[in-house]
Every structure is written in C-alpha cells, then in structure tokens.
Length: 305
Length: 262
Image (cartoon, rainbow over the protein chains, first blue to last red):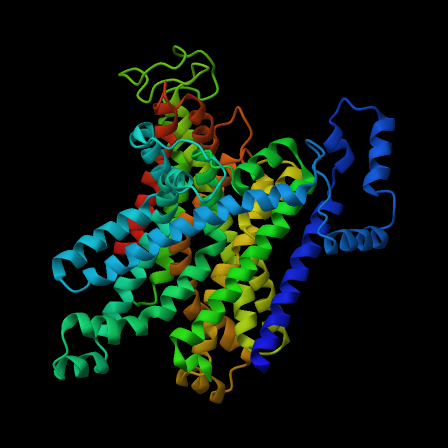
C-alpha cells in the first residue's frame, strides 16, 4: 500500500512537470505569440490588444498562477484559429484516437497469440520469424502507403459518422488500425521468439515435459507466464514512439483524431491548441503507464513482494 | 547476438558507413532536385525519369536521393549525440545507484517517456521555427533517454562483478575504474541498442518532416514528399511510393545489419 501511494505521488510529480513544461515552452518562446496568432499583416495596436488579452504583459509569476487556475477549471484557452475553446475539441478528437489505438491493440494481441502458438512447430516458427523481420523493417509510412494504394480504393467504408454504436465507424478504422499495429506486432513477435527460446532452456520446462504434459499445455501454463514481463516492458517502452506513428496513420487515412488536429495546429501555429494536445496526450500516456505498472504484480508474483 | 568486445566498434563503424553512404547519395542524382520543369508535370516513370516527375516537373529520383541523404544524416547525427549524452548520464546514474543523481535521472527519463515525442517536438518547432538545426537539437533532447537507460542498467549490473572488485583492491580510483574499465564495457550494449533504435529515430524524423517541420521546401525531405504526394494519390502514385520505398529500403538495410553482422 505504501508503495502504491509513493508511486501515485511520483506520477503526480511527472504530471505537474508536464504541465510546467507546457507553460515554459509557450511562455519563453522567442517569437511573440500574439504576432504569431494574428499574422504579419496585423497592426501594432491589434497585437498589443491581443497581448493584453492573453495576459502577456503581466509578470511570469502572475501568468503562471493564471495558467494554473484556468487549467484547474478545465480551461485550456481558446484556439488561435477559430477562437473556439480548446478543451472540448481535444477531448472529442482523443476519443477517435483512443478507439484507433484500442483496435490496433486488439490486432497486436491477436497476432501475439498466433505468434506464441506458432512456436509449437518449427515450420510455423520460421514463418513468424520472417514475418516479424518484415513487419519491423516496414516504417509505418511505407506500410500505410501500400494499404492506401492497394486496399483503400476497394474498401467501402471511407468516412467516420461519429457515433461509436454503429459498426461502420469501427469498420472504417480497421485499415488504419491494421497499419498502426504492424510495427508493434513485429517488435513484440521478436520478443516472443527470443524469450521462448530463453525459457526453453530452463529446467522447469523440461520437468513439465518429463511429467508428460502436452506441448500446448507446457507452452501456455509454463512458458507464457514467464515471458509476460518482457513483453509488457517492451510494450511500455514503445508507447511514446507509437504515438508518432498513430498521428502519421491518422493523417494518411484522414481519421479525425489528435494527429490530424496536430497537423492543423502546426500549420496554423495554433499555440493554445498545441498546448492542450500536449497536456491531454501526456496525461493519457501517464495513465497508460500506471495501468501497465498495475498489471505487473498480476502477471509476476515476484513483483508483489 | 555475439558478445565480444569489438561489438561497439562495429556498430560505430556501421553507423558511420551508413551516414557517409547516404551523404554520398546525392552524387548519384541524375538531375538537380530543385530545378522546376526539367520534365513534364506529373510525368510517369520511364527510362529518362526513373521515378517520374512531380507536379512542378522536378525529377522524383533526384529528390528522393537528396531527401534520403538528409533524413539519414540528421537521424544518425542525432543518434550519435544522444548516445554521447546517454552514455555519460547513464554511467553517472548507474554509479550513484539509488542516490539523488540516480533519482533525478529516473525522473527526467520517466518524464520524457510520458510526453509523446512528436507533440513536444511539434510544439517546440512551431514556436522556434522549423529547420534542420532545430530539428536536430530537439530530436537529440528527446531521444537520449533510451540509450541512457540501457547504459544505466548495464553499469548497475557490471559494478558488483568480481573484476571490478579486483580493480578496487588493486587500488585503482573510482574515476579510473569507471572511465577506463566499466564504461567501455557497458558502451557495447548502449551502442548495440542504438543501432536497433535507429529505425525508430528515422521514423520520428520522417514524422517531423511529414508534419512540415523538417527541411523546408523547396529542399526535399522524405516525410514531406510523402505528405505532398498524398494530394495526387489517384493520379500519380509514384510521388508517394518512391520516397516511401526509399524509407523502407533504408530501414530494411539497418535491420539486416543489426541482425546479421552485429
């Protein structure tokens, strides 16, 4: 229990660090945010007025208090682009991104199960080995283009209706989720291969075989529980990079998630929106990290002590 | 994976060779990648323009070669710099295991893992202005944490070994043991890891370029070419396919070297 509380406090400091970083990045920018927002054609008075509205005239301490207060109320400011509040837009977009990530996690997990089963026979093991190599050798941009060129034209579901109850929306996400899953599939597949190879040499596997247990039983009861920790650790390590490919995939398949919003905000130099995206995505990553850490004691009894 | 002492040197050699080979790619370019109207607009691939021409009549093959050179050289230099930072930071953290430098190190690396790289980089670059140097600096600041963690873990495992004890007994100073004995040993792992990490760095760089934050037009960047090619996906598939294939070949080559030679 003590450990759990320590851990939560630690993650809380990380989260505060993220919020502070978002503040620092946007406050200490060498370029004037008001000038960025209004463009080069705005008059000096307009820029001054906007600076006052954003509170840039005040001291750094006052700005930080105001920033903290607004965040505590769930107010991320207004977009420079269309002057709408940032928070609802980011929250709406992140639903789509989470749905996409969820779907691709399901694909990854199914592949992982197939990969583990394939370890039973030498031919299938070799096959998955080659598959894993190819999957990790393909950058997301490359596999995305392959799917767009050869599959998307014939794929009937080409837009998002926005209601997750309907199956159409999930069907629309399938090609994108599949492309997104390719790289983690390969990486985790390689880990499965390596770790099963490592576990195969250990005594308890031989002991289980000697007791006359079937290969499937030995695999799932004795080997798989022992390779779960490295798999989970690899998955957690991949997270920050995984988000990069998520955004690329979203833009390629025009999925209206955080990635497309990020692209738009970068093009418009929409600072409040970027700030909102930064904070919300980092919060999600931290939550996932916490969830992963909570799984460790479930799969490895040694961690419980 | 073979475990001999020269592994780190081989990785360094492979990385340098890759960087030099890619920097030399522009020499193969048949045309100037920036000259507009060298061929027809959206010309199909053929004997004269192997990968066709783009919407301004520029030769796509030349642009892909220049773009690959830029992507790989930025990625490899950023990787080398992050490796230098990571080795020092990781060794310090490993030496001061569970004392305050280690705690600070863990906090910072956890913090970097919490922020999605691409968003951080995109935010910084859209404020500071995009460009090659800025992309390199920001890329290095976010990616050093992974090699550093590998280095730290390796140092923590190495320090209690008998041969380190023997050096202590022989009266070598901690500084000498760390810099002359432990760090060279542990760097092998960090180097090997960094080669496996390179595809991720390249993907990150291409992602930056994809968002328009890498090399600025008219200079060709692989990600940017793919992004621009999406506008003509139905009429001119080669605009998108050529840079994507180049990216694939680069990553494939790295994976082959990492799997078979290192």
